[in-house]
Length: 605
Image (cartoon, rainbow, N blue to C red):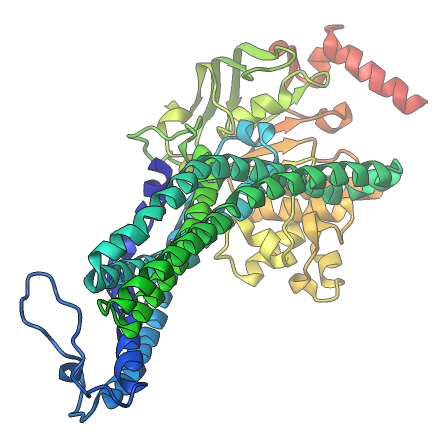
């Protein structure tokens, strides 16, 4: 039950609305229970002209010994039983309708609000996770949990919670009416309830497991869908449509089987309830024949009792179905709470202070790092590196040497496992993440743009920037000319990941975004790779404007782009192998010279 109570805790701040809804549902339940009370007088007095017109007594209230009559609760005087019963029926349905409508709305308001808070909390928690989390967790599965799993929870704590309150109060009212009518007959009639409730309770655990299995299968389906759509160009290039279709088909079949297992289990209580209900009715009819013949029971009293009993079985049946829905929600919540409970690896120090504006030195001091469960055992060991303000420092080396990892340590996308990184003497683990990342801008090889307007993408780092400031950044990034030629200029929506733009255009918008942020430290990660010659020249001009007056760490594959760097660091196997300027490293006949010659040979070919 811990998951259920945890879900309900999200409704705590909406407790006034929830309390009012409970009261309204109790009123609706009491009104529902009044209906069989009104049946008896109709059969015994209204439909039998020879019977005496008499006042209709109401069920006794515990602790009060005075007998109340139906005509006493009428809003105005009445003169006969039929008038009393007719007005009472109308008032009961009116009261029930108003209370049920308002109570249902309030419960739904509480449920939707609580689940919206849960979805927001889940999104915020996942958003703050470190880079390693996203490297090891499928985007499709994350989306499935935040959307589909929480949809199951939403169904339970909004619509089903309202129905649970409605049916619970209706059942309590009807049970009270049954015992007021004939407590012995009621006790005998309700002996079948344990035979209904016990199997339902046992089925709950199976339903929870079946739900979790179905949700996992749905997450796998979402993963395949996301990959096939995102990588649509690759799928087409390799004629893999049939392969992806087969993957999707197999996953869909597993999802179907999981859902059918759930349906088979959750549908089982209904026929059980109906069978035991039929047994009860047959027994009651046999008993009623004897009692009516003996004059101990009127037909109206028995009809009211049977109607109350039949009305009771509907809430009981509904409650078992609601119980199954709650079990489904609990099963779906397990993965959501797993994400919420995950210990975040990149955390702020409890006493973290803002990082002062960068002035003089970035110092990698004895830095060590390794990826947990790395398949190739990659690690950075005892890295010492100093980057002074205003310098351009290039990191070069073979693929997989650790260049991007080192750059990712500075904004704390990863945390060092030993040693420290200092900015002006401040350990970056002791300052707030917001202040640290505010002073670092980056332009990556794989530029990510949002499916929004050009202006939105450029202004992403400074969302309060004016259009004039955005245009100025675009001009310095050599992007203003092509942007103004777009159909809606700066208001043009550029598609998912900037699909409507060329690679060079996307890169220049990324540079404009970094320019507008105006951070003192800049990381360029293979920023000119995969561009044609014309685009590369434009991007280099834009990068020249961006690098002016900033401290720059360049991760370079093309060595020709970093000849003028103040310092070139050669990384291999996670360690610094060589350090110097282009001329110094070329004279050492080491790794740098070998890489340079290999690239030169490639260019000659």
